Length: 277
Image (cartoon, rainbow, N blue to C red; front, side, top):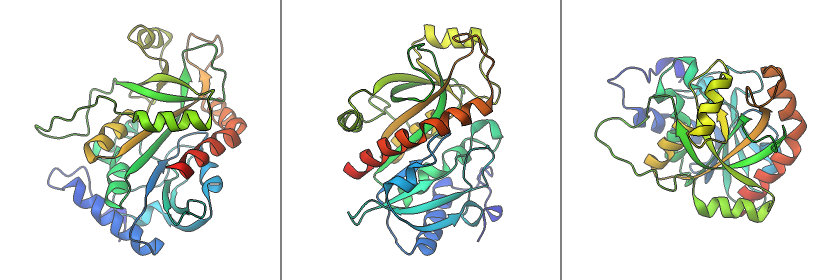
């Protein structure tokens, strides 16, 4: 079974059925029918899985219904089933995500979240690399997401299904993260559509409306996670100062470089948090 046989963009396809199919393939390939925690690893977070525990199985995204190969440099095109220390629990670690700017539709963007729920997870950790609006947050700084502003003009929720997004980013999990690293700060993440970087004027707009971080992912996934009943922990890695905050031009190479420099700190932070969930 491959993702090429599944078309999430077809309105007649039930995205939750595809998620259930994907979870069944993951269970078959990993040898376990239940995972406890899911992680979506953005730019700069790739080392996390190695620090959580032993990887017990690796599954190529292309073998799982609804998933695709990585489209962005710095992401992995596979998912892993990882032992969470010696707790007997498992983490399902997605090495990449589908971004909204890839043009596959919102269903594809949140498919990993829905698959995590179908695989038995009760908590999802969403990470990303982003631009920072606070000059004090140097590249390599991890920041907890306490709320978001979704500027994509889209939602993963279909129909008259009204979901409360109050405390979307679970306060208990944010408190837990601060127990692990008391120096962690919090901010509001603003998702733009991308793939172009934001203009200085757009960055200033984000700041005026309450944003602290700007990027091209996470918000739509978080909304889908709340709809699914998952607890959500969001953490951004500031990989660069946003346009106009710094006088330097933006580049994806800079994002990767900052991610590599901060990889161990970020990985250890998440590994410690996941170990306590």
